Image (cartoon, each protein chain N blue to C red):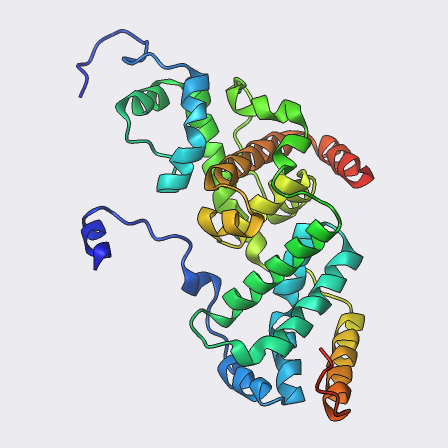
Length: 220
Length: 101
Ligand SMILES: [Zn+2]
């Protein structure tokens, strides 16, 4: 009821849940069968979602073997907990949230302090928003393809990459990200902004420097 | 709203740095990076640097949906290990060991 007042203002719908998580044929049946312990149904759910879960892990972790381990963890967790799935959110949303939380838990166990990532990564980048961007540089619009973007995202510092993947790719809101990363929403907004600034910088550079940035990141 | 004049300077005097400081919130609120504050609107209209910046950042955000496509595939080994995990769960259940967690 409180929401009614908001209807006068133009509500820009976020990335539509439907578009991001379209219903999948046979999924609902597979979920019900999986709840009853049907092994075939597990296999079907895995086949339906393995690529997105794995891709998400890979982008968050930037490392194949860790991404595979976390994919395995995520599905084992899923199959053990599937009885508690009530269908209040889309299944894939539920699965992605579970995956993100497992990955974050894994990173914390490794001693990566996600809250302070901002301070630990390239302190000089904190000045980035204040920098004067030259208009003589080529415009990005229309020039970026998926491969170039994927490569640039992979070379982002981990903290920036995390927020960018969660917000711009996966469609989580800042308040959800803040909860998951245990930081403030302001922190999430500013991390996202810095991530996009960094991407702009990377995408405007010739390929070589992106690769160098990637190597620098990998060497850490 | 401001009267037309030949003065090329923005009517409100905010610097690029001040404008850019507002960007994280602008993007977060509207999603499009288009401000409502007249000072910011004026700056955006008159400053090529900042309008190019906003355009690029919006473009990057939009292009991110390209990455939603799951392009990577886990190796077959992952499913094998999941099955092993599930099988050992079943063995545990069958093993009449209710205290097992
Ligand atoms: Zn400016």
